[in-house]
Image (cartoon, rainbow, N blue to C red; front, side):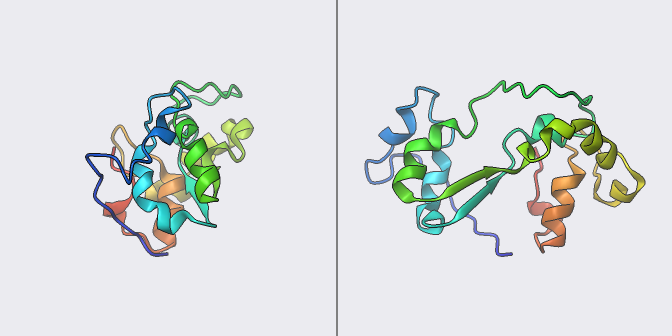
Length: 139
């Protein structure tokens, strides 16, 4: 797996920034605009909602309650560029108790880093795919 890094742009990308604000959710996904060339005809896997599903310290529940619009502001961009968005934490989210048990299991301890951002499942997936630990979710 190749990790591609880009600098965030401080201004619009070819005047296309309007498509990020049309949903009325603030345009928070706008930093993805710099990856347009990689996203065309691709599948984008994100960790949106991971703070509720993968965080070791969050008590398990079966309610999919969103408290932010992450992922919502990329709709027009996604349709224009032509890619599929899969927010991975939603896969199996109704089995949060099982995910919580796995996150806190002995087998996942090597992928637990402690602190306020401790998501061993996603860390394990990415590290085993070859992404160095220092590039995986720090905050």
